[in-house]
Image 1 (tube, rainbow, N blue to C red):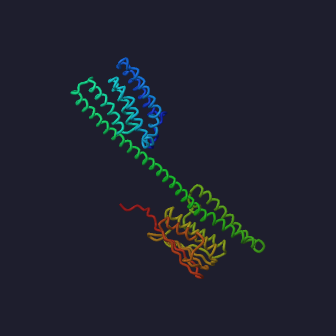
Image 2: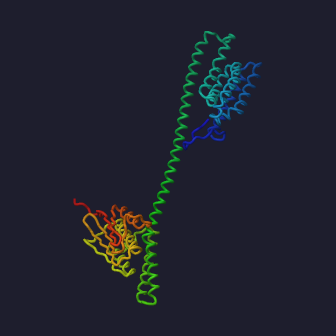
Image 3: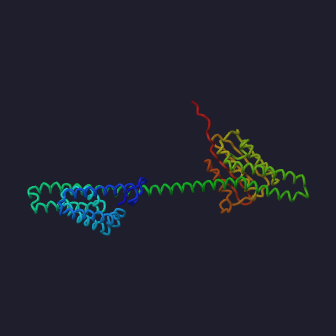
Amino acid sequence: MNMQAGDGTAETLDPMNPVSTSWQVFFAVGLVVITVVSAVTSDPPWIWVALPLVALLAIWYLTLGMRILRDQDRYYESGTAWVFAIGAMVLYLPVVLISPMALFGLFIISPLLFMTAGAAAGTLSGGAILILPELVRASTGAVEWSDLPITMMVNVLILLFAYWFGTWIKRVVMESEIRGELIAQLRRSQADVERLSEETGAMAERERLAREIHDTLAQGFTSIVTLAQVVESELDTDREAARRHVGLMRETAQENLAEARALVAALAPVQLAESTLDAALRRLASRLGDELGIRSHLDVVGESTDLGQPVQVGLLRAAQEALANIRKHARAETVVLRLEYGEDAVRLTVTDDGVGFDPTAASSGHGQDNIQHRVRHVGGTCTVRSSPGEGTTVSLDVPRLRTEKSPA
């Protein structure tokens, strides 16, 4: 027989668990009561028949009944449960015939029959124990036939109620088992959702870190490598320029170190920590010009205002990516950054006069994708205009975050 555990899962009836132990104690006490009643109320010649039958009933329960209770479904399907019910009836029926007071023992026999063999077998076996002794007594003259209809009617009503109650209990148990399985499935599904959420969160964090490293540390190291190559060629020809480029290498390395610390601490970009977006973009443009020996500057149109950290970070990282692409591929002589503060939006344009490219062609890099992601993350759009030999223009349009209070 299956019982519902507290967490909604089904567990088999184990003689070591409290429910099973309580039933064993209840059954043992019942057998003791039946034995005492049979010994007290049986005629002396028949007492030695009744008591061995009660003992055989106990052995029948210990050898087969307990196994059925532990795995009711398997034994019920094989018909063994019915065999047990019929055997228990055969053993207990003579006890009731010998000692009518032993009928009181149905309070322990009936639950056993219902639990092991089900409502139908329990009702039939219990009905036989109730009705057959009365018929035998009437046929022997121990009771009047005229008293039998009322007794039979009461017994039939008891059996009908027992059958209804047994089937109702079985439905309740089955529904409880179904609910328990559904709850177990739900908990497994919740565990799967939590695991997938953790994996998704970890993947999103890895992607974020990859973008941050690509947009900051990787570009800084690329700049350092480029400057180192320039310094190698200037050591014998232009020591003053070499010293200037070494200074740029040191400054870039220091900023990379600060970016790494900020990345670990999940802080804002170092360029924005103690300056405005305009100043950070101006430094980026100036450094690109110093590294490549080209003209590079920032134009600001409109009144410079605080755009909010998310927008500033998005524009700064997108600009870094655009300048990194220019450094790697453009071979430009002039780079112009233009930051326009509008009433409802801000536009950042990065223009170079380099070799250009075909924006519709497949790209093996991640530069354009990173720029698109950065801008979309703050609700903006990115437009790339370029063609081979005609330079490139990257336009970033981002809506401004309204922080001003509306008039009362």
